[in-house]
Length: 336
Image (cartoon, rainbow, N blue to C red; front, side, top):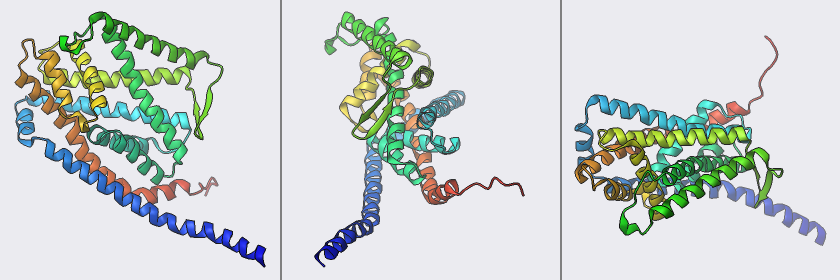
């Protein structure tokens, strides 16, 4: 009898835990939505919408159309990051679904940080579409690596060849900057060598299996990421009305991006402007022209996609269960 009672208690415990899981999941989901809503409100209050409208309207229609076209290209390029992750993980989600999730996550990442867009949104949407947590972790990790590999390569070139000159008060000499650039290029060379020739290609870290990509996949990572960073620089270059050299604009964008990561301000509010003014404001470009260009950049590259992403997010949420069930239904291979 004692054995049977113990057995029943052990059997009842998992059942009780299973009953609690849906409630806990609903609470966490509600907290996630509340956090996103709060962050959106905080971001909206930090934006001077009058200045944004003025910055947009003083550009020609041709300039705005060119910039919008490049924004579309940039978001498509970012979608390739997750398509590389699709090949890396071997999951079978449709390409259109992957691109949709990637667009939503990127828009939220730019505005509300990597924790919300890159991690929170990816886990939420991909899990709703039927992917396991381990697969989502690999997708996020590869996407993050892809983004920063391109950044490291371009930063290495910009620093090693002396494209940019940092303000004197930053206490980084030209020689130190060139050495940093060479170090970054050596890191990329080492990564490619490992992808091509490393004998050990699998690791397990805290239960997560990591596999070193092939050289071909590493090349795809660098190509997609470098092109995306170049497109972002081209957007700002156009908005500055070609009043600064493109390599310089690229270098300043790279510096401002890492500064934004270090400071941890949502969407880099203030950091982007501060770095551009410090590094471009000493020439023939006025502070007002730089700020106007960056306001337009934020409006077209950050805010407009975010508004669309919010609509697409709730649309995908409402259809996620149906899409998941459709994906898991067995296919009838017999001819009618």
